[in-house]
Image 1: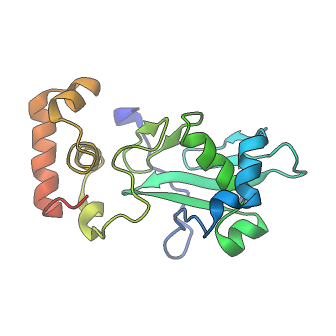
Image 2: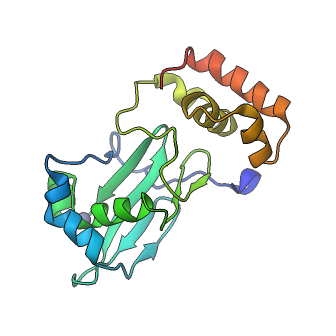
Length: 183
Ligand SMILES: [Zn+2]
């Protein structure tokens, strides 16, 4: 985590409405996109904290893909025709394939924390938590890891190089704002 030096993403500032979340269509494990994801390498790479270029080996063109954590979910959108029309394509599939195997890093847009694989608190269909946006980045970070993801407060404090009491205070503030814990 880059801590105080982290600048939140401005990628979505010019968009209307909520960006898309990753959804798997019915029978996705048999889809051509998923087959391609497993067999084709990617010549692309990250562009900024929220987007990557994905350029699959058998493809003529690179595609711009949003792939980042926000709140408790994954924002995922591709500019290719299939991505726009169905919300699913070889490019999104490729990123999911690699992220779920620890091969790419995905950033959280609010906390700035980087994840080498989907975190324990991540949900495809998180319960509605409208007040999550009231939390400060540090409160959100602690809340996601300790309350939603069930990581112990002490191990989390040690791992992030902070005092036990600091994390406790963040959690108390977060719980007060959000209410009870639903995972
Ligand atoms: Zn695509």
